Image 1 (cartoon, one colour):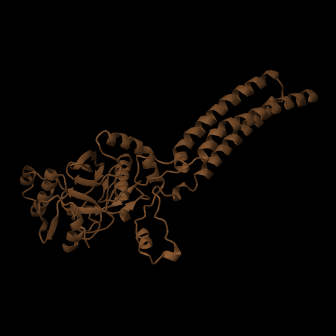
Image 2 (image 1 turned 135 degrees about the horizontal axis):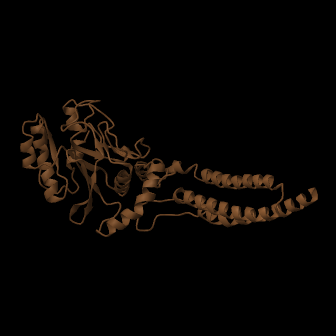
Image 3 (image 1 turned 30 degrees about the vertical axis):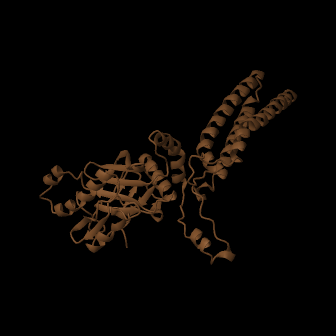
Length: 381
């Protein structure tokens, strides 16, 4: 009986060894190809966005590993079922060893996946500005290169490009727009809506109106730190205010308080548009919508837009709404917002403003090409 068992064991494991080697070769070949191939965005994203092979693995490896493990397990079960036909009393031990080897194979795949993606969070979605040559640090070209804004990235910002990039490109192309066009944002607190505009041939065009998942406080401006109010007025987003490592998936800082807020003695900090659905004075957009908003804002800044204007209103600035809120203590402040609101709605371009003790004032009715917008003037130091 012992000799019979040894014969079956040699036959079983010799065949199983060949099966494991064949399976490993078959299922790792495609994974190795993905791991050694550099992948970039299509040429239509000509503003410098790059994606490496690790970014592609981030979305491909999990599905690929799951598929491989499922198929390997199915074929292993079929192989083990054939081995049961010999009716050997020692088969229980052999089957336990077979199951252990199967788990070892799956663990090997998992370790390879996590080792390959371990450094993905530290890479750049955008290629950083090259460091100037030490021998040419004093040259004007080197200083100009060194002064270019740096764009940090994270797993969340990379997933935004992977999840939303192709879909946004197709949708914008149908409207004559593209990723990287200048962005302008308007927010209406009462209706909980965020309007995102992209600059087309005849001014800024409304791309999409996003629902705001949560905004705290009541109608009226933010006055001090901790009042849980969302601000009202005109703000800007610059590259340094992008937060790809936010606790709320992705976020960017609005730059509150601006010049007018400081003149009124208002305090506060870290007022964001971010993902999730919880607000303590910020605008929470959900992770899915925030990926689209963040991607378009980041691309516009990378493509040369210096600042993104953000206009925040309590409600639609119609005479009916102003009349309905005529008894509010903020009515004069809100009336100072209306000309800027109407200028953008009529011309398609942000207005230029001046700061007055009682609010904002429209400077002129020009389109503002090459001139400070409302948000830029309000946020000037």
